[in-house]
Amino acid sequence: MKYDPIDHSLFVQNRKNLAKRMKPNSVAVIRSNDIMPTNADGTMRFRQNANLFYLTGVNQEESIVLIAPDFPDEKMREMLFLRETNETIAVWEGHKLTKEEGTATSGIKNVKWNTEFDLMFYTILAECDNIYLESNEHIRNASVVQTNNARFIQECHEKYPLYNYERLAPVLTDLRCIKSKIEIDLLQKACDITEKGFRRILDKIRPGFYEYEVEAEYLHEFIRNRSDGFAYEPIIAGGGNSCVLHYLENNQPLKDGDVLLMDVGAEYSNYMSDMTRTVPVNGKFTKRQREVYDAVLRVKNGATDMLAPGNRIPEYHKAVGELMEKELLGLGLIDKTDIKNENPDWPAYKKYFMHGTSHHLGIDVHDVASIYKKFEEGMVFTVEPGIYIPEENLGVRLEDDVVITKDGHLNLMKNIPIEAEEIEELMS
Image 1: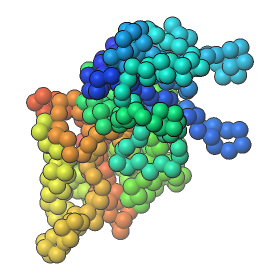
Image 2: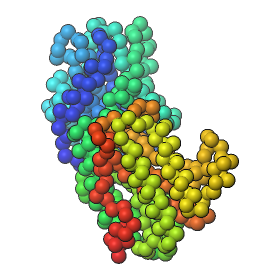
Image 3: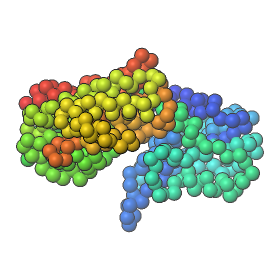
Image 4: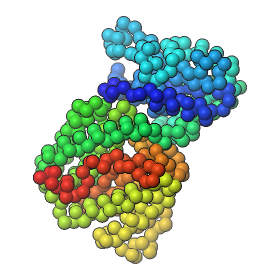
């Protein structure tokens, strides 16, 4: 890992919170993600299962956590299972966690090699009625790959068909959407690294510079500040590419008179940031670009004010849509006739602002949470309105990461320049 060690009190408390939600005489098991193959003997970089990391802080493959809060032997109520290393693994793959390091990372005292898991699990089941298992129940999950945890679900049902099975996802989803102080500090660190990347690039952007050169500058700054890199595939979109919501090619030259939309974020310690800024390639917005930019910024500021306890995403998005409708009328992009004749399920403003304004943020970029849960202190959201005008080769999106507080909100990206005048001044 590149990041500084995390205080394991975070993971100790997370496990306590989970244990309180479990039925009596239960056991919960979460296994790490697989290392995914590419081609031939290649593999992708390992990315830990978010729920296992949330409960242990362990960032290593072939790891398992077992939690049985009511087991008679207190030493077996929490167990962490790690991959046992040897000289060959050390030579070819490098260092793997020792049992002592597993305890230091997670706060779990009983650490065993994962070859012991089956026997320990069988022993625990003798005193349990319920088995909690993990699955990806994110409402936008579209994976066709069978995960390690999915295989374990099948294995358990075949070996232990008479137990009562419970879903871990609803419980952990509800817990994870409220961030602790340590988690918010980690998110702030990720945002601070993103700020460094943005400030680095501002004095380098110019006509003739390539989108991939911008991407490279961000990556350089992120990694040199102990990030593992991008929190997600970066969108570096000049000119008409700024109107493609998930543009990923990042291979075109930047042209004089165009804008550059950059949707990027640094990852730090498995926590994600998510920023979007739109800047003029030549350092000066045109009159029309500035009109659209200021309209988006007003919507973003208005939407941010709505991120307060008690609101909910459906009502919030509807209210933000009303703000955007007003701005699009002012820009001449829609008129009252368009609004009068609109489809209620796809309002007129959706022609130029077709995506949602906010999503939860945390260990995952699109973090787990119910969209119907009322906003509470400790929730973290993006706020990212945009206006996209393909006929003008002009797309503007602005995005910050915001924590819901007791009385309102805290902008984790408040120090990242966003006002048009400041952007132009820094680019000059």
